[in-house]
Length: 236
Image 1 (spheres, rainbow, N blue to C red):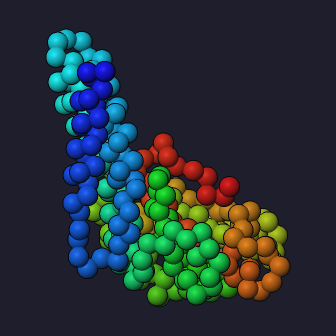
Image 2: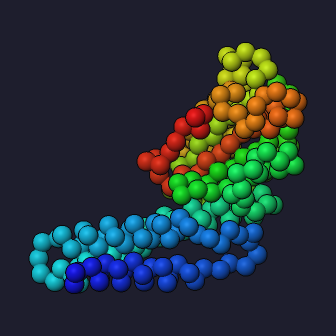
Image 3: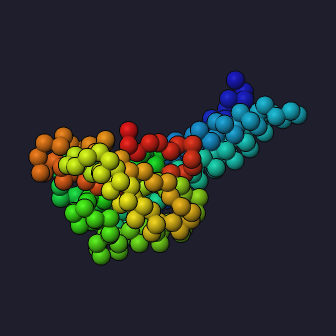
């Protein structure tokens, strides 16, 4: 039990440190759940490594290891949390984790975050003309703003997926969605080529039964990951 106290102390210290961030002028989501999760997991892992290292003063090593591990975990979480707020700011919106936000046709851009990634949803109506993979001027400006921001985060892994409605064949829509994903990815290639995928109409937001619902399904999604291990298939 005496070695549990240093582990808990190192974890608690990081929660105290992570509560101090406040940058005015941003449209922020201040929950910072990923920061807290990263800090806790990093602290526990670091403390256990320190404790299990051979030698004397295991309690002291557990405390030091916990602090170092927590700092590393906090850095990953904080980077993602900070990215979400900064991306939302440059796109002129806020972080919106409401699962129903994607069903509102007035939301041309939706920035959301999970424990594993930051997600940007761009509506098709602002991005491309019908049957085209060429970005419209306003959309190109917005994507370029994201690219400029990504230069601050060279460690970020970028994924881009294209999505269509169900009009036309699967082969046609898959090719169009891939072309649109590549168009956006080309602009976001500031720190390396993003992973791209054309999903066609395999991952619908709403049933393809009306003009309105089909418009909801036509979109491009951009995913910002801290590492490859947490990447997921955007078409599933």
